[in-house]
Image (cartoon, rainbow, N blue to C red; front, side, top):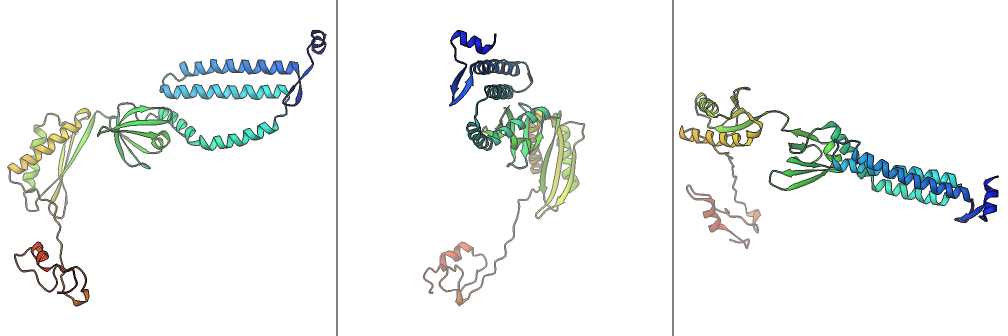
Length: 317
């Protein structure tokens, strides 16, 4: 006995009208079974992916992977069901194709950030709690890593503010991680007068480094004359400190060096700039503001004194 004769005996029609097309009843039933089975399989695969696969991934990444698996299986089940039903859905597919293109452009950055988040996990350039410097395409960001999610990375700046960066930008930038080593170098540059005794200055600084218990013996500290500047001699100080003590050591060394140099009467010059003024009196500039018109600056007389006496707003003397 065939399926058709069984339908006839049960009083069930052989075909039904679906979207204006005649479809066999058994195909409709089979289509429903495929859709229900696909939904059940999608839920199961989502749960397995979110809980058991990639357990070392960040929770946000596992959750998004589960969603991708879920919707992928649903899409396959729907396509299979449509193939079984033999429905002519060319119009729906055309509209769906256009909608898919639009959605694809709209979610392009979303998927880029998701893939970059997975690559960041695989590459592991940083982890939560690491102080890092992110440079490259972005303005330099010195901060502590707070969270790496599927789409973005969150940082806490050293001034207490929080920054969220898309994973695509983070992955394509240079990341300098300061927690990768047990020690970090303290770099300080000071300037002393051109005529100061350089050997004396270097000896004072070396004694300060030797007396500081947080300055490491190995690698050995280094103090040397680096260059001659506009108003003095630049001296570099390099000293290694435990990673967790880097900032306190730097503060201590700057303060101690300045105090010792002052105590030993070593000149620490300020930046200087020499400006030459060429002041001329010319009748062709009448009508313009000219504080020095018709007069010369006397020795011992300041520019403010000249300005008070010679300001001409009318253009006439």
